[in-house]
Amino acid sequence: MANLLHDQLPKDAAVYIEHSNEVWNFGFSQYTYNKLNAVDVCKTTDNKDPMCSIPCPDKHSPNSTTPCIDSEVLAQRRHLQRLHETVREFAVVFGEEEINKRIRGIYAEWTRFPDHYNQTLTWFEQAYGHGAASKYLLPWRRLPTSTTTTLGTASRLCLQMRRSRTL
Image 1 (cartoon, helix red, strand yellow):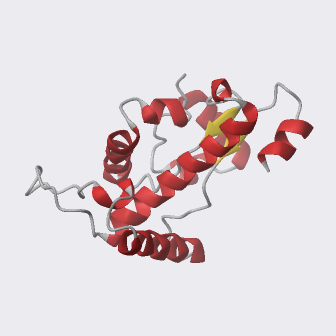
Image 2 (cartoon, helix red, strand yellow):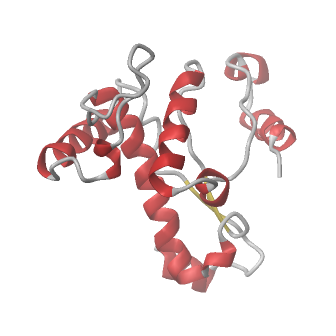
């Protein structure tokens, strides 16, 4: 896919990459697929994968070293990890310098629970290094949770997203 887009798109066109649609939504099969795969990886890698080896957030034991076994947290981490891997695969074709220029990783999560974002992005920085989120993910500001009801149309939503994005 990266080769095809690189060869066929105009040189000034950007490629927006999202791991999947509504991976957070338990009403869709991709939620189940992602969650089961996250759990399977952690069962088979002896917790060496950063998705599993970095402890889950725990306000009662913030210094815990116990590998994460919370399937919801693992699913959130896998969602961002797969996006990171995909952006890296596109960078092989487009060039590292095109990350966040022509190759734009979009991390989408349910905004009703901002702690999910914060915890997963904190994990991402721990797993892939300080600054990894700003390097591999398109910067953005969180839209209000009422976006879908107050904006109405897709074009108005896109306009709001453009206005709220930070560079």
